[in-house]
Image 1 (cartoon, rainbow, N blue to C red):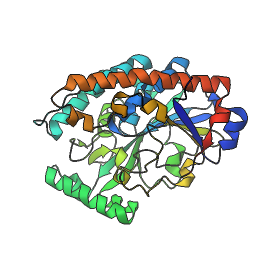
Image 2 (image 1 turned 135 degrees about the vertical axis):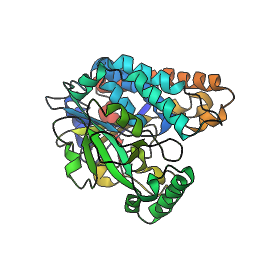
Image 3 (image 1 turned 180 degrees about the vertical axis):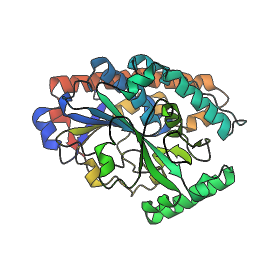
Length: 358
């Protein structure tokens, strides 16, 4: 079978994987990157985890599911009462979104709210909040100063200034956005007590859908979520602005962080996307097992391309073709699932894993 994925392990777990392979009981954290429709290459992988209950088997300890935007939605679906059904509802709802030139931040927000309502129902709420195995940490940001404005031009200015200041030092993004998480469980996750420098709030029945909407509400393009219940007063937005792909040390102790990514490069923040010299901090990667599509797999996709937000523009007059292509990507992603499960179950991962460098 052709190799559909590659495996890379941080220095803290590379020898562990080479010695014993990937054992489910080693997984302490599962994290998903932001990135819009790129997450469709993850569909097969995620469904394989759900079908096999791979994450539920991982030791007597609880497993943290964490991410921002689409990565957070994947985690929320996995924590639902019927995770396979919720995940498929999310996939269908997201892929069938149609946007036109007449849309504005408010109408886009309304469509995303509908997506959230579609895959998280009222029966899921107590299950997510009291999951027998999973805790959640959803990344968002709390807007500050100019970024709190509802005027789209002022929002745009805040984004431009953030991008410029990020060139100097990413910490200056804090002038406009406070790093924040919303979490389930009895206490904030361990990483939030280690140099987190952000806000932490509990998820509850009243705010969970607002949090789900906020984590995907990119400034300028989507309306922010105001005054989330149980949190500080203010406007909350897409957590990917700061935690775009992997920008935290999740402290998985003697275990590891499982990270399925849509590409090899790991970009810290949203403003770093085109700053190719900016890389994830080495300390954040020491206990990370990164899995991502191989070049062989990408060549099989429509136009040999992983889906992204530009598809909404490319196929604005032919959304049916866009949906057909995205469905094809999801279908092909089952090959990724097969390669992953075979590599883990056979132990081949021990020979295939490569070093992960920052």
